[in-house]
Amino acid sequence: MNQAALDPRLPLMQEADLRDKVVLLRVDHNVVKKGLIRDPYRIEQTFGTLYNIVERGGRPILMTHVGRPKDKKTGEIACTPDSAVDPIVRYLEQKLHTSFHIPSFPVEGAKGIPHLDSSINLAIKELRGRKTGGIYLPNTRWFQGEESKGPEREAFARQLAGLADVYINDAFGSWQSHASTVDITRYLPSYAGFLMQKEISNLDRVLNPDRPFLAVVAGAKYDTKIGPLNKLYEKVDHLILGGVIYNTYLAAKGGVTIAGVPDSDVQAAQALVAMDAREKKIVELPQVVESQSLEPPFQGQCRTLPISGLKPGQRYGYLLDIAPESFEDSRVKEVLLAAKTIFVNAVMGYTPHFTEGSKALDQAIDKNRTAYKMYGGGDTLQEFKDLNPGLYLSVIDNTQYYFFTGGGSVLTAIESGTPYGLKPLQALMENGGKQP
Image (cartoon, rainbow, N blue to C red):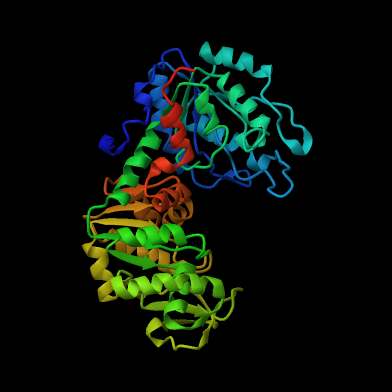
């Protein structure tokens, strides 16, 4: 970890006194879908912080959010098994060979859990007495105060603080301003965990890269990536686009209509096209896969389309993938192999039906054995693991690779030019390390 990349105002868990302390640890174990763990990577990345807490005599209480159980329109909170932490706890117990207690609190119908109650006190007593390995609170978003804007939020933060002696935030991916990530820092000595520190250090390698710097960015919607995309464009030496972002760029540049790309996005992309006409940083992928339908089966409906053949004023079908042969193009290979820093936030095709472009991208990037390669985002990592399992296993601990646990956090930090604009980090720097 590059400690020099960390702001000296950020309080680190190395500085905390943890002996015989109950430590409230906020993690990002948001890996449960429909009651099952999709990928344990984010869980395992917090093991270093957990080990350190226990090794130094601390007793951990963990908490995470899972999914989005709160309906944004009605405010109703669904406390269902699909968003419970139970699968996470079972995984931790299997891996760490210890027991975790999940406390149970009354649920007020669609209002969720109104507050922590005294029933947890016995569990904390047993935790201090080392009769249990840890406590894992229910999904933080089941509590009324977690995302509330009213007095419930402050009350929840105070109740959380009443459980512990020290707070550690190791949830880089949980960048939203909530009670368990921001407000809690006002009531407990608060510090950044080891994963949080590692994510910030690697983000510095995106913001201050060794050059040449190549970024690969894709996405299902152009408008959600405009801010980070423009900031990345300023920093990179070369930029490769994929997915709907690439389709939008091609439509804007070529004056063509592409199915699934709204006119508003094409208009928004004109600024990028104009900028690249001057700077010439975008490396175009020469072959795409076109389909007249989004519905399977796709056999007989698809064709490989060279972008050089796009004719102004013409209408085209859905561009659903990058053809793998694009990564054999001499210009594309030259840029990929010359880069010293590569940042990837990209799934290149319409999943789960079109994956060949993403698979070829990862394999082409791996051929550069000298660049530092960073992947950001859960979907990006999941596709890498699913499409190239052998490659994934061979590089997961490779010092030339880094996989961020929080894709949204990375893009938000890129857009603002610093990770320290994220509200949870601001809260740590303003309040952290201090006695209440």
